[in-house]
Image (cartoon, rainbow, N blue to C red; front, side):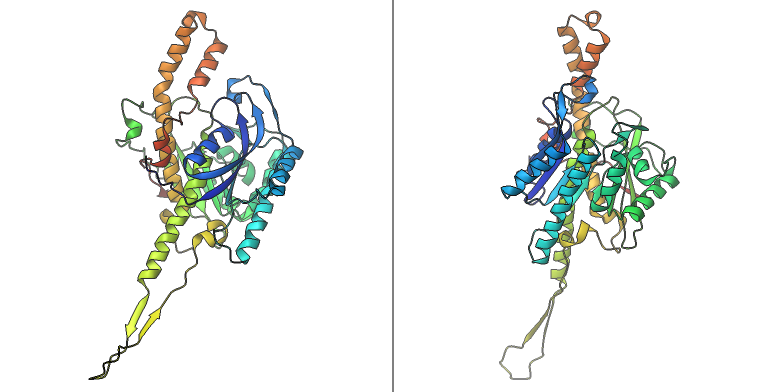
Length: 412
C-alpha cells in the first residue's frame, strides 16, 4: 500500500449514525476517512447496537439539543476548525436543522478566514439527504422540508433516485425526467454539485459495462457480479446554473448490503478534495510553463548582460473558489466531480466483490455451528446473512486507497 495519503492534510466533521457492531454510518465513514489520511471528528446522531437491517436493535437517537450541545462543546475548546463536513442520517427535522446550523457556522467562519487571506481553501459540505429509498420514506414527514431548506447551503448532495425525486418534485421515469430533476435541483437550490447514487432505470446510450481483469475479479478473492446494472449520474453546474451531466454505468452484486451509501459519501469527501488539488496542480504547472522571458538584443561590442523581462500569470486556485466550481470552459469529463466518482465506484466495486466472496462461506459456517439448516429458523438465518453482508474494510485498505478504475464516465 502506498504510504502517502491521497489528500493533503484535511480535517473533517462527520455527522451520522453510529453502531456498536457493523459497518454503517459514522462507523464506516470515520474508518474510511482516516484510512485516506483525514483527521476526523465524529458527531454521532444515533447510538445503536447494530444497524436496522437486522430488524432488531437496541439504543437511542440523539436529540437536536444534544447535537447543539456537542457542537458548543467543540467550540468552547477551539476544536471547531474543519476543512470539510460530511452529514448523513439525522433523526428528525429539528436535528436536521441543528446540523444545518453547524454547517452554516463553518461556512461563515471559512468565508471570514478567506477574506483575511488565510490559505487552505474553502470549506466544503457534502450532504447526504437520507430520507428513504425505493419509493418509501423512512423518516418523519417533516424531515423532507427540513432538507429542502438546507440544500442551498451545501456544496455537494448525494441523494439516491427516490430522494432526488423528493427534493426536485420530479418523478424520475426515464433519461429525460432524470435530466429534468437535476436541472431543477441546480436551478431551485443553486446546489453546485449533484451525484444521484443509484439510478436503476435504463439511460440513453448506456452500454453493458465490460469487466476487466483486476483485484476485484480475482477468483481467490471475489465472485463475478450479477447481470443487473445500475448507474451513478452527476452534474457540476455552470455559472448559468445549467447542468454538466455525466453517467457511470456499472454492474451490481446480488444481495443487500447496508452501509454502501455511507461508504460512498465518505469516499466522495476525500476523492473530491483530491481531484480539486490535482486540478490546481495542473493549472499551476500550465501557468509556470507559460511564464515568458524576453531579452533585449545587445549592441555590437556591448559586454553588459541584456535585461530580462519576466511575465507571470496570476491564477486562481480551484480550492479557493466557492464550492470548488470549475470554470464553464472545463469539459464535462475533466470535472473534479467526474474524476472523484470514478475512483469512488472503483473502491466500492472492489470492496463489495471481496465481501461477496466471503459471504457464502461465512453463512455456511454459522449455520453449521447452530446445528445445520434444519435447526436454523428464518429469523436466525436472516441475522446470520445480515452479519455476513457487513462490508469488509479492515483487511482491504488497498481497495480504498489504490483502486483500479474499470468503469468510466460518459457524457449525457
